[in-house]
Length: 243
Image 1 (cartoon, rainbow, N blue to C red):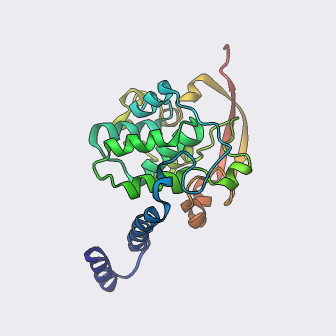
Image 2: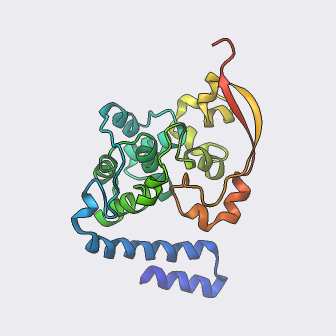
Protein backbone atom coordinates (compact mmCIF):
# COMPACT_ATOMS: atom_id res chain seq x y z
CA UNK A 1 0.00 0.00 0.00
CA UNK A 2 2.87 2.37 0.71
CA UNK A 3 4.30 1.78 -2.77
CA UNK A 4 0.89 2.35 -4.42
CA UNK A 5 0.43 5.52 -2.34
CA UNK A 6 3.81 6.89 -3.46
CA UNK A 7 3.18 6.05 -7.12
CA UNK A 8 -0.20 7.79 -7.05
CA UNK A 9 1.35 10.81 -5.38
CA UNK A 10 3.98 10.89 -8.14
CA UNK A 11 1.29 10.62 -10.83
CA UNK A 12 -0.70 13.49 -9.34
CA UNK A 13 2.41 15.66 -9.39
CA UNK A 14 3.93 14.62 -12.73
CA UNK A 15 1.32 12.61 -14.59
CA UNK A 16 0.98 8.95 -15.46
CA UNK A 17 3.61 7.17 -17.50
CA UNK A 18 4.55 3.71 -18.70
CA UNK A 19 6.95 3.48 -15.78
CA UNK A 20 4.22 4.02 -13.20
CA UNK A 21 1.99 1.58 -15.07
CA UNK A 22 4.62 -1.13 -14.73
CA UNK A 23 4.80 -0.63 -10.96
CA UNK A 24 1.06 -1.37 -10.74
CA UNK A 25 1.43 -4.25 -13.19
CA UNK A 26 4.13 -6.00 -11.16
CA UNK A 27 2.24 -5.51 -7.90
CA UNK A 28 -0.81 -7.15 -9.47
CA UNK A 29 1.35 -10.05 -10.65
CA UNK A 30 2.82 -10.41 -7.17
CA UNK A 31 -0.65 -10.89 -5.72
CA UNK A 32 -1.65 -13.12 -8.65
CA UNK A 33 1.15 -15.55 -7.83
CA UNK A 34 0.42 -15.47 -4.13
CA UNK A 35 -3.23 -16.39 -4.59
CA UNK A 36 -2.53 -18.79 -7.46
CA UNK A 37 0.00 -20.69 -5.36
CA UNK A 38 -2.76 -21.40 -2.85
CA UNK A 39 -4.94 -22.74 -5.66
CA UNK A 40 -2.22 -24.71 -7.44
CA UNK A 41 -0.98 -26.40 -4.28
CA UNK A 42 1.74 -29.02 -4.70
CA UNK A 43 1.23 -29.14 -8.49
CA UNK A 44 3.41 -26.01 -8.57
CA UNK A 45 6.42 -28.21 -7.73
CA UNK A 46 5.69 -31.16 -10.02
CA UNK A 47 7.15 -31.77 -13.47
CA UNK A 48 3.85 -31.23 -15.32
CA UNK A 49 3.23 -27.97 -13.47
CA UNK A 50 -0.14 -26.48 -12.54
CA UNK A 51 -1.36 -26.66 -16.16
CA UNK A 52 -0.63 -30.37 -16.56
CA UNK A 53 1.91 -30.07 -19.39
CA UNK A 54 2.71 -33.42 -21.01
CA UNK A 55 4.50 -34.59 -24.15
CA UNK A 56 7.86 -32.96 -23.45
CA UNK A 57 11.09 -34.97 -23.35
CA UNK A 58 12.87 -33.50 -20.35
CA UNK A 59 16.58 -34.00 -19.83
CA UNK A 60 18.60 -34.02 -16.62
CA UNK A 61 22.02 -33.51 -18.22
CA UNK A 62 24.17 -32.39 -15.31
CA UNK A 63 27.00 -31.12 -17.54
CA UNK A 64 24.65 -28.78 -19.43
CA UNK A 65 23.10 -27.68 -16.17
CA UNK A 66 26.48 -26.79 -14.68
CA UNK A 67 27.38 -24.73 -17.77
CA UNK A 68 24.08 -22.85 -17.44
CA UNK A 69 24.67 -22.15 -13.76
CA UNK A 70 28.25 -21.01 -14.37
CA UNK A 71 27.34 -18.72 -17.29
CA UNK A 72 29.20 -20.78 -19.88
CA UNK A 73 26.48 -21.61 -22.41
CA UNK A 74 28.05 -19.56 -25.22
CA UNK A 75 25.08 -17.18 -25.38
CA UNK A 76 26.37 -13.90 -23.90
CA UNK A 77 23.06 -12.50 -22.63
CA UNK A 78 22.31 -15.72 -20.75
CA UNK A 79 25.86 -16.06 -19.48
CA UNK A 80 25.99 -12.47 -18.20
CA UNK A 81 22.80 -13.01 -16.24
CA UNK A 82 23.92 -16.27 -14.68
CA UNK A 83 27.33 -14.90 -13.72
CA UNK A 84 25.70 -11.86 -12.14
CA UNK A 85 23.37 -14.14 -10.20
CA UNK A 86 26.26 -16.27 -8.93
CA UNK A 87 28.27 -13.22 -7.85
CA UNK A 88 25.53 -11.04 -6.36
CA UNK A 89 22.46 -13.16 -5.64
CA UNK A 90 20.41 -10.91 -7.88
CA UNK A 91 19.47 -10.35 -11.53
CA UNK A 92 16.70 -8.28 -13.06
CA UNK A 93 13.27 -9.74 -13.68
CA UNK A 94 13.79 -9.57 -17.45
CA UNK A 95 17.08 -11.41 -17.19
CA UNK A 96 15.60 -14.10 -14.94
CA UNK A 97 12.94 -14.86 -17.52
CA UNK A 98 15.42 -15.04 -20.39
CA UNK A 99 17.86 -17.34 -18.57
CA UNK A 100 15.00 -19.52 -17.38
CA UNK A 101 13.42 -19.82 -20.83
CA UNK A 102 16.77 -20.79 -22.34
CA UNK A 103 17.16 -23.60 -19.81
CA UNK A 104 13.65 -24.92 -20.49
CA UNK A 105 13.10 -24.32 -24.18
CA UNK A 106 16.58 -24.67 -25.64
CA UNK A 107 18.54 -26.86 -23.24
CA UNK A 108 15.25 -28.70 -22.52
CA UNK A 109 16.33 -29.46 -18.97
CA UNK A 110 13.82 -30.26 -16.24
CA UNK A 111 12.46 -26.83 -15.36
CA UNK A 112 12.47 -27.64 -11.67
CA UNK A 113 16.28 -27.82 -11.73
CA UNK A 114 16.34 -24.14 -12.69
CA UNK A 115 13.68 -23.19 -10.17
CA UNK A 116 15.61 -24.92 -7.39
CA UNK A 117 18.82 -23.16 -8.42
CA UNK A 118 17.10 -19.76 -8.36
CA UNK A 119 15.62 -20.65 -4.98
CA UNK A 120 19.07 -21.35 -3.61
CA UNK A 121 20.79 -18.26 -5.03
CA UNK A 122 18.31 -15.37 -5.24
CA UNK A 123 18.44 -13.08 -2.23
CA UNK A 124 14.88 -11.91 -2.86
CA UNK A 125 13.44 -15.40 -3.39
CA UNK A 126 9.87 -16.17 -2.39
CA UNK A 127 8.32 -19.54 -3.35
CA UNK A 128 5.21 -18.05 -4.95
CA UNK A 129 7.09 -15.58 -7.18
CA UNK A 130 9.96 -17.89 -8.13
CA UNK A 131 8.11 -21.14 -8.73
CA UNK A 132 5.07 -19.26 -10.02
CA UNK A 133 7.08 -17.47 -12.69
CA UNK A 134 8.80 -20.69 -13.78
CA UNK A 135 5.52 -22.61 -13.99
CA UNK A 136 3.31 -19.85 -15.38
CA UNK A 137 5.61 -17.90 -17.72
CA UNK A 138 8.43 -20.28 -18.63
CA UNK A 139 6.99 -23.79 -18.77
CA UNK A 140 5.26 -24.24 -22.12
CA UNK A 141 1.47 -24.35 -22.05
CA UNK A 142 -0.20 -27.52 -23.40
CA UNK A 143 -1.37 -25.73 -26.56
CA UNK A 144 2.21 -24.74 -27.42
CA UNK A 145 3.41 -28.30 -26.97
CA UNK A 146 0.60 -29.50 -29.23
CA UNK A 147 1.71 -26.95 -31.84
CA UNK A 148 5.23 -28.39 -31.92
CA UNK A 149 7.09 -26.17 -29.49
CA UNK A 150 9.93 -26.40 -28.61
CA UNK A 151 11.52 -26.40 -32.03
CA UNK A 152 14.77 -28.35 -32.14
CA UNK A 153 16.24 -27.06 -35.41
CA UNK A 154 17.30 -23.68 -34.00
CA UNK A 155 17.29 -21.50 -30.88
CA UNK A 156 13.69 -21.08 -29.79
CA UNK A 157 14.17 -18.46 -27.09
CA UNK A 158 14.15 -15.51 -29.50
CA UNK A 159 14.71 -13.09 -26.63
CA UNK A 160 18.22 -14.50 -26.15
CA UNK A 161 19.12 -12.77 -29.43
CA UNK A 162 16.66 -9.88 -29.48
CA UNK A 163 16.80 -8.54 -25.95
CA UNK A 164 20.55 -7.75 -25.91
CA UNK A 165 19.97 -5.55 -28.96
CA UNK A 166 17.04 -3.78 -27.30
CA UNK A 167 18.13 -3.60 -23.66
CA UNK A 168 21.95 -3.71 -23.81
CA UNK A 169 22.70 -2.14 -27.17
CA UNK A 170 26.17 -0.93 -26.13
CA UNK A 171 26.92 -4.24 -24.36
CA UNK A 172 27.87 -2.52 -21.12
CA UNK A 173 26.19 -5.21 -19.05
CA UNK A 174 27.33 -8.20 -21.09
CA UNK A 175 30.95 -7.06 -21.25
CA UNK A 176 30.98 -6.27 -17.54
CA UNK A 177 30.34 -9.94 -16.80
CA UNK A 178 32.06 -11.53 -19.81
CA UNK A 179 35.48 -9.81 -19.97
CA UNK A 180 36.73 -12.44 -22.41
CA UNK A 181 34.52 -10.86 -25.10
CA UNK A 182 35.84 -7.31 -24.68
CA UNK A 183 38.51 -7.56 -27.42
CA UNK A 184 35.86 -8.42 -30.03
CA UNK A 185 33.91 -5.93 -32.16
CA UNK A 186 30.53 -5.27 -30.55
CA UNK A 187 28.49 -7.24 -33.10
CA UNK A 188 30.68 -10.29 -32.63
CA UNK A 189 30.73 -9.93 -28.86
CA UNK A 190 26.93 -10.03 -28.91
CA UNK A 191 26.89 -13.11 -31.16
CA UNK A 192 30.33 -14.78 -30.84
CA UNK A 193 29.24 -17.88 -32.76
CA UNK A 194 29.58 -15.74 -35.89
CA UNK A 195 33.35 -16.11 -35.51
CA UNK A 196 32.89 -19.66 -36.80
CA UNK A 197 30.61 -18.76 -39.71
CA UNK A 198 30.51 -16.67 -42.86
CA UNK A 199 27.71 -14.43 -44.13
CA UNK A 200 25.51 -16.20 -46.64
CA UNK A 201 22.68 -13.94 -47.74
CA UNK A 202 21.00 -10.81 -46.46
CA UNK A 203 17.37 -11.24 -45.46
CA UNK A 204 14.60 -8.99 -44.25
CA UNK A 205 13.49 -9.70 -40.69
CA UNK A 206 10.03 -8.87 -39.41
CA UNK A 207 8.92 -10.97 -36.42
CA UNK A 208 5.20 -11.43 -35.96
CA UNK A 209 3.18 -10.74 -32.88
CA UNK A 210 1.76 -14.17 -32.10
CA UNK A 211 4.81 -16.31 -32.83
CA UNK A 212 4.98 -19.21 -30.34
CA UNK A 213 8.71 -18.53 -30.10
CA UNK A 214 8.05 -15.54 -27.84
CA UNK A 215 8.09 -16.96 -24.35
CA UNK A 216 7.21 -13.58 -22.85
CA UNK A 217 3.75 -12.11 -23.35
CA UNK A 218 5.10 -8.59 -22.89
CA UNK A 219 6.35 -8.82 -26.47
CA UNK A 220 2.74 -9.08 -27.62
CA UNK A 221 1.33 -6.48 -25.22
CA UNK A 222 3.96 -3.91 -26.25
CA UNK A 223 4.09 -4.99 -29.86
CA UNK A 224 4.10 -1.47 -31.33
CA UNK A 225 7.49 -0.88 -29.68
CA UNK A 226 8.94 -4.32 -30.22
CA UNK A 227 7.96 -4.57 -33.87
CA UNK A 228 9.94 -1.41 -34.61
CA UNK A 229 12.96 -2.49 -32.57
CA UNK A 230 13.19 -5.99 -33.99
CA UNK A 231 12.43 -5.43 -37.65
CA UNK A 232 15.28 -4.89 -40.07
CA UNK A 233 17.98 -6.81 -41.90
CA UNK A 234 20.02 -9.83 -40.92
CA UNK A 235 22.44 -12.28 -42.47
CA UNK A 236 22.01 -16.00 -42.74
CA UNK A 237 25.28 -17.79 -42.10
CA UNK A 238 27.14 -20.83 -43.34
CA UNK A 239 30.39 -22.54 -42.34
CA UNK A 240 33.40 -20.28 -42.06
CA UNK A 241 35.55 -20.02 -45.18
CA UNK A 242 38.16 -22.76 -45.30
CA UNK A 243 36.46 -24.85 -42.61
